[in-house]
Structures are given as C-alpha cells and as structure tokens.
Image (tube, rainbow, N blue to C red):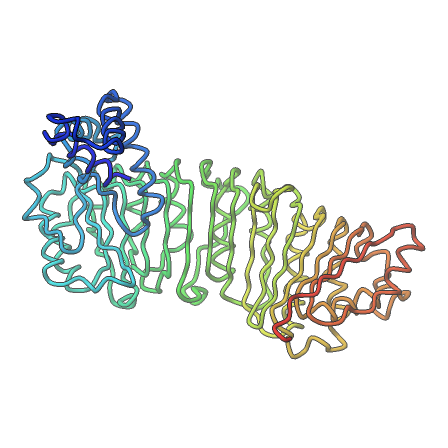
Length: 508
C-alpha cells in the first residue's frame, strides 16, 4: 500500500504529468486525481493514516520493526508530519543486524534507540561486528528505550561496564541466554538497580538473583516474564513478592522454572495474620514449577482481578494445594463457578481447564492446571484429588468434556471404573457430557456399571451426573453399550439424549 503511495507521490511531482495533460491516458488521469486527493488531505488526517499503518505493521510483522523511515522519505511534507509526532507514532531508531549505529546515528533526530537483536531461527548468532554495534549504541544511555538481546559470555563482559548505571529511558528489556544458563549470571550492578520507566521485563534462561532490587524501582512495570529460570537464578517466593510490592501496575506475571526447586528450599508460608501483597492490576498469572514453590508464592499474593491463570506442575507426587485453593477464592472471576470444564489425558500427563465464558470459551476467564503423570490409574487418582482440593471450581459446571489422544495400557484395568465414578461425583451440575477419543469405551462402561445398585463401587447411579441431559460421543470405534444407563435415567424421570459422531477414517 505505502510503496504504491510513495510511487504516486513521486509521480505527482513529475513535470510530464502536468505540462501536457492532453497526452496523459484516461487511466493515468484517474490515478493522478487520486494522488491529488491524497495530497490535499489535512495533516491530522495523514497523521491518522500513518498511525493506522504503524498498528497494521506491528500486527502483521512479528519479527520486523516498523519502518517509519520509508514514509519519511516520500516527501518533505510527510517527513515534517512524522517528525512532529514522535510519541504518537512511537518513532525510534531501531538498530539490528547489518545496521551499525556508528554509521547512521547522526542522520536522524535524537530519537529513542532500540537495540533489537531477537533470537530467531533464521538469524545467526551475533557477529563481532554486531556486538560492536550494541556497544556503540550503549554509548548513548539516556536514549536507550528497548534492549532485545541474546547474551553470550563475551558480549556480557563487554556490556557489564556500560550497564552499571541506570538507563532512564529504558521501557522494554528482553534477554535470552538459554544456552549458557548454568554459568551466565547477570551481575548485581546490572542497570544500577534502578529502572524508573521499565514496563516490560522478559528474561529467558537468564539468571538474575538480584532482580527483586530492580523491581523495587520499576513502579511502571506492566509485565514480568521469567522463563526457564535455572537454579543459578533462584529467587525465593518471599524475595520475589517483596519486589513485586512496588509494581502496582503489573498486569501479567509468568514464572517458569527449568527444574524443580524443592531442594533449594522455600520461605515459610505466610500466616493468616501477616499482610499479603495486593496486585490489584494483575489479570494474567502463569506458573511452571513445583507445588511447594507455588503454594509459598500464592500464599503471599492477593490478586482479585485475575482472569487468566495457568499452572503447570513439574512434580507428580500426591500433593496438597490449600494455598492455591484459597488464592482462587480471593479472586473475583475464578472463584465463581465455571460454565465448562475440559479434561485432556495423554500418555505423559493430563490437564484440566475451566472456562468461565458461557457463550464462548474465551469470552471469560480461564483456569488451567497441568500435571505430568504416567499411567491412567495414576492420572485418575491425581484428577480426583485435584477436583476435591479445588471443589469450588467443579460443583457448578454445566458442561464437561473429556478427551484422550491414545489408549493407555491400563485403560481396561478393572480398578479404573471406580476411579472414573469417583472423578464424576463432584460434577453434580453437569448437563452436557462430551467424550472424545480412545477412552470413550472405558468411560461408557463406567457409566453403564454406575446404574447397578452400588455397582460394587459404593456409588449409585443417581449420584453420577444427576442433571445430565445430553451425552455426546466422538470416537472411531463402535459406540459403548449404554442401555442400562439410559433406561435407569428414563425411569428416574431424567431423559438423556445420546449423540454419536464417528470420526473420519483414513481407510477406504
């Protein structure tokens, strides 16, 4: 679009189009009229168009910065409009691969500087010339607004002397050092421990033990992402929350550990008489680690406005999660009964996801818990335990989906049936049940046996999905026998409609 506008604008300035209009074809005169219309637009309209183009470029060019300088080269007027609104258009000098700062810095106004070397599949590691380019950019500390780097030890050694003092304009910090996670640690003096304008911190495999000190000055922080944190970057829950206490604007918090941290020890959990840190702006929380760290962490936080919560536990031992249950109970959205719950089982684990949007699963909040676990019997035990611990999330569920991507070796174990029924019992409000995948026969068999008085399981038929109205089965095999289950419901006055969908087969 903008290349065409640039070409038209240049064509407009060509004398041949104005000196001899009689020789211009009609189609060209139409194009000329359109260019003239663009040229007559007021400055504020052009500025609006430029800003729309900026947003469009950011949305569709995930790995490329906005190239505003291309518009600035079209004509003097466009350049004047662009440079008159640097904040509205978020103008910055982006220095990346093959764009050395020392050669081009003086060609533009004193705009903010973005050091942008993202770790992409198609990009090679930083060359010595690229490293020199980064060092040259840091010679202007008052203008650095963004740092996106993949760290190596030689590069960190070069940068450390330059980054001992605060960068007053820094808003975005992303550092990746996954290949060096066991030995590469950010120094205590990094950024001078002061970041007054920092809004986003993204550390990927980058140990930074003194991060809480940095957080204590990041009062404008909006998102904090600590991904694949190695043991060398361990920060106790108490220290982390103490740093977060100074971030009232924080909306997104993600913590992901590379290994379990149980052996490193955590702080003592907060007692009921101690004050918790209130993160009133927090709407998204993601955690990947062991249950002990999670329990210690959430016991110290109140986040009433949480809408998206995703928990992945690295340990599959039987666990107690009372602090997580209380944390959910202190929220507004998540403590309400979800409309839909989805359980997914695969060979190495399971996940349970609660959706709070009634009309569409993504209209409201979500809560997801994933646990690694081998063997269906073990998975069923942990699932039932989880539902009991987080009973506030299951009692009012109206739709339950259960999906498995393959048949575990113990799916037909005779002990599986009572485990299914134990799992189903807390879901007393389910009206629609959808079963997907290779466990449909096993679950159908459990439903059928539940109609037998006690069924040898201690659970009678009416106690399993007493409000069920619709049963949807999606499977590649023959539908399981459900005659007794359907007949028992009909006798009790609760008619269940069964809908079977056969998946498409690869065969003839």
